[in-house]
Length: 67
Image (cartoon, rainbow, N blue to C red; front, side, top):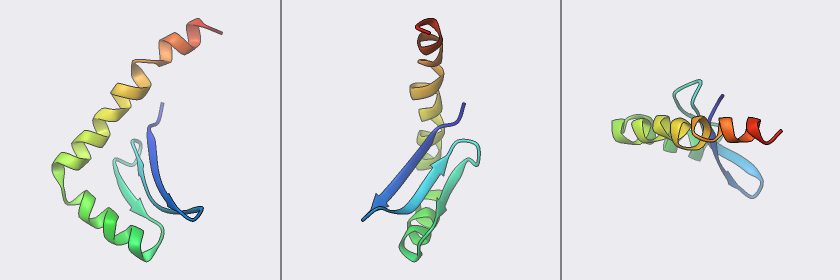
């Protein structure tokens, strides 16, 4: 299971957090600057890593039970 949070503007992906990578990755100049700032904030990274448990791991069993 992987948690991904992406930020878009005008259908262009600027920045993405992936739980498998464990940090933000920027895809534009603006996105790279934001990713660098967010990656230097330990509270932001720990909050995003915790989202995998909040959104994914707590709901995966209910999805499989309904199939």
